[in-house]
Length: 395
Image (cartoon, rainbow, N blue to C red):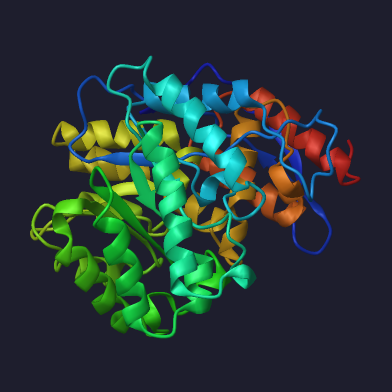
C-alpha cells in the first residue's frame, strides 16, 4: 500500500461553499495489493448497475441497462476476491430498477459467475413487483415473496431476503412479520441472508419488525432468525449503529453470521473483538473495492495494523457518500465508478445522478483522492472537469 511516486501532482479548481472555487492538488493513487489467498471474512460488495445512456426511453419512468459494462463490473469485483450481492438497493432496487429487470440482472450475473472459479454471489428477493398500496393483506406479501424466491431458485441462485415495503404497510403487529418470515424460511432450498434495512436507507420501511424502537424490533428479528437458524446463513443489518449491531451479533444462534451493513463503522466491526466479528455485505465495498480487498487480505495474513491503515482513510469517504439523505448514496457509488473509468458516463437509472449536489460530488472527489482511490488521476480530473462544465464551471 504505497503511493505511486511516478504520478505527477495535478491541480483542479473545485467549488466550495459560498459559490467560490478553490485549488485542490491531487495526491495520487495508492497501489493496493491483490489478494493471494482466501479471506478470513465473507465479504460481499452490493454492486451497482450501469445505465444505458443511449436508450430511447423516458429515464424517470423506464429502465435501460448497459449489460456488458454491468457484468464487467461484477467480474472486476470477483477478481478482487469480493462476492457480489446482486440486485440489492445499491443496484437501485426500489429506486428505478424494477423486478423484471432485476431478475434479468440476476440471471446474467449467475451465468457470468459460472465462468469464475470460486465466484460468490447472492441475490435479492423481495416483494417490489407488488406495489405497497396494492397489498391488502399479509397473504399478498407472502405470495409476492414466494414468487421472487421461486424465480431466483429456478435459476440456481441463493437468496438475500430483502425487506418489504408492502409488509411494512400492511403489518399490524410483530406477529405479522413472524408469520411472513416463518412461511418463507420454511420453504427456501438453501440458507438465506436476511436483510434488515433501516429507514434512513428507505423511509417506507419505518417500523419494520413491528416497532419503531430498534431494540424492540431486534427482539422480533432475533426470534425469527434463531428459530430458523438452519435456514439462515446470516443477517445483514443496515442501521448505521455499531453498538446495536454488536448487541445483535452476540445474540445470534451458533452458525448464523452477522453481515455488517454499517457504512459508517465497517472497519472496526469487521475487525471484531474478543467475542466475535462481523462479515461484510456493504454498498461502500462497490466504491472502495481495491482497498477493501487489500485490507481483507492483510487481515487474513494476521496484519491488523495494515488492515486498519488501509481502511481508515476510506471511512470519511464512506460517511460522505452515505450522509443524509442516506438513500441517495447510490449517486456517489456510481460517480466513483465513472471517475475510475469503470464506466464511460455519469448517467443513472431513474436519472438519479441528479440526487446529489455539485458541492457533494466535489467533496467526494477530494476524499476519494485522499483515500488513494482515484486510480488514474489525470483521467479522474478530466472527468471531474466534465461534470463541472455541465454545471457551468469551465476553466
